[in-house]
Image 1 (cartoon, rainbow, N blue to C red):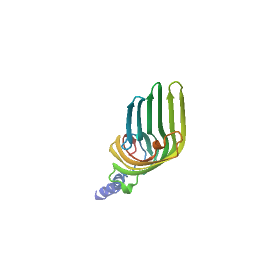
Image 2 (cartoon, helix red, strand yellow; image 1 turned 90 degrees about the horizontal axis):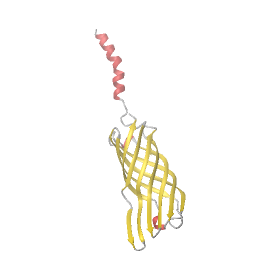
Image 3 (spheres, one colour; image 1 turned 120 degrees about the horizontal axis):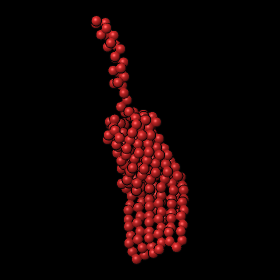
Image 4 (cartoon, one colour; image 1 turned 90 degrees about the vertical axis):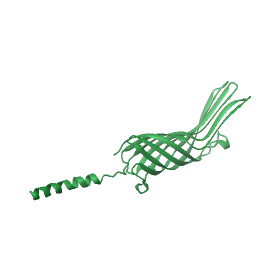
Length: 203
């Protein structure tokens, strides 16, 4: 009887050890969609006899998708609005904005994990930055200027619940020179943002 009990215990031991060795820090297979708002930059509005206008510099909003293809590494796709301006003068309306389309990777090292739900990360992305200008008035015109650029970021993801997360990050946009924009309105440089997201998959 004692031998039978020992045999059952021996057979069950690998199952118990396997259950205890589950990697709680692995992000493999997880996906997320995040919507962010810029925390830095400048916003202004003008009202005068010549017309009205509004201008925003720095990151206004962002939208990103991530999918972890490794316990610590995710592929990322994202876009954002890095600056926008609109003016109305008489019968003329002019708008312009800068938006990138970025592809890259994000690395969340286990060694820096503060908990299974709080994961610092670094990321690097690159792609085209599009400067769009449109004018509506006596004449109708639109143009798009494209320059290459890249974005580096450091931040932290907090997986608050199974399908909900928050992120805080600081980033830097290195962008080629845009010809059809004022020197003082050239996008790029350092900024900070806060994001909310939905997440699914993984363990």
